[in-house]
Length: 328
Image: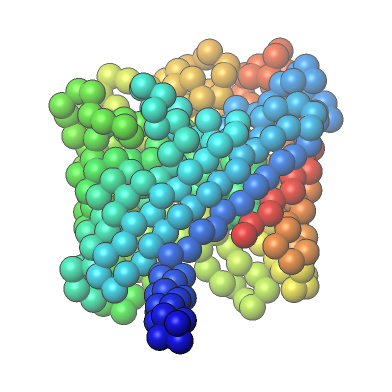
């Protein structure tokens, strides 16, 4: 009996040790977000800016985001799941609906210290903003982010060229074809990075996009983010524009920032909603971030001013949002 008990104790000790080792490699993280949005002037009560997310009236839901990741010495994976209105908008390109909760799903191989291969579905390398609200300063999103691609499915190679320089090359399905390839054609992407500044390029079925994303620490408390993009297609409408993101930290728990964006449709791209060719919109968003532990409270004032009547008969729309984002 003593031998049996001793054997069980040793076995349970080995299992617990193995579990502790695995816990260091496997992580489960994510976020939940919800918000209130209302119009101050312009349009009807349910009129919203023409950008993605945070566009419902009254008290509304964002999404729950669950990210399971395994990081090994050489290989690993990321399974990023979303559920809720924001998640549905992010994965709208699922043709069969079977992947409508998958934001990202990829495996990777660290071939060497300077080469990493990734295959699967991953969020876009274009633009300053991302889908997850935890990684954005502003809660609502820009026009540039909303009408660039959200995600890609394919294979990419990341190269560390030097301490400050990186290169990424990718072969992917057509834009927004994140579940499988429906056409037989492929898109090509590239990114050149230098000291936190990135030049991005996407070529897809005769259309191409050039994007610059970067930022500078002007001081210990003042950061300036920058995004500029140009999209053009063969005999098809396109867009171009730029956005600045100045942000100031007033304390350890509070930051305030401003997003100023000028977005222009080259032809009737359909992003602004005017139905008129060569429309433009100037959007200014004043945002605060107040952090209480893992919870961030985000009050936001936004003014969208279009060249044509884009907001139910009005050229301008002013709105207010109050969001709560909890990360874990």
